[in-house]
Length: 305
Ligand SMILES: [Mg+2]
Picture 1 (cartoon, rainbow, N blue to C red):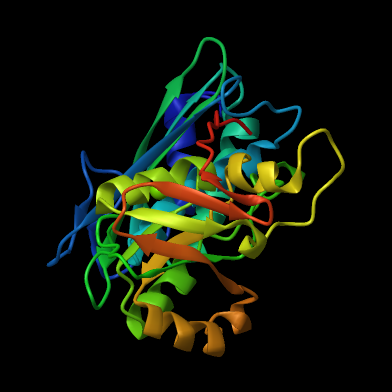
Picture 2: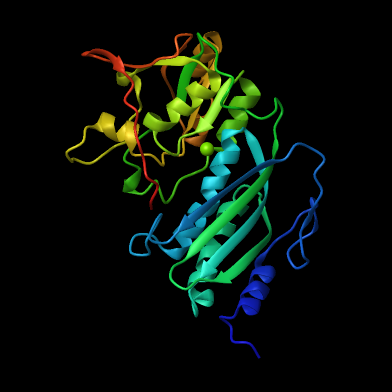
């Protein structure tokens, strides 16, 4: 009989944990899953590597699994999509399947189940040195189709959900992907462009602007900055460069933005929305502060847990 840390035993354990639903014609156990989709499919994948993106000194195996799933869910949210299926792959050092492996899977599965996502397949492998966790999430666009980065128009308002910065206080490991928020915004307002903030506003803003071929004036005073801690960097620098906010950055026509800010349609979810600037035809990105205007500082962020 194979010992419980073996790959077959671990896969059997995973199969016993996985739920299914009517969209899954064939789930884990055959060579591939068979999914009943009659629509455009959103697909995204992300990998976390021990020693590069996380260490187990800081993050439990459960938290690493949860994050591996949540970063993908955040990307589907960024398209205003409905996440439906996940595929997961984990490489584990010998002898850790029943301990580390199960906790990673539990984290992935609980994060997925929160949004009705079914894990329909995956792979487990041996790793000689550290743990590698990868998740792929598939989903469906909602009512108005996928919300892209490329639709921002001059005159649109630039908005964010929640607060920015200081994610290392814990949000980088434990955050709520804005799946529900994004779908509601997309259903009620003419969202012209949207993305999730993984690299920090100082990096991600430029992605949205370049995809939309527009510029922006961002008002530093309007940035909703998370509660922080004292160090040698300013709260503004934290808000622009910390990364891993996993909030939504989006644009919509100015008149609709007025209605949105008045209604604050996500408050029942505990998610305020702030207007942080305006989209311009001039391709420059500008940061307006009390001291004057300057080019928006381009931030860099290296992902790690
Ligand atoms: Mg993204």
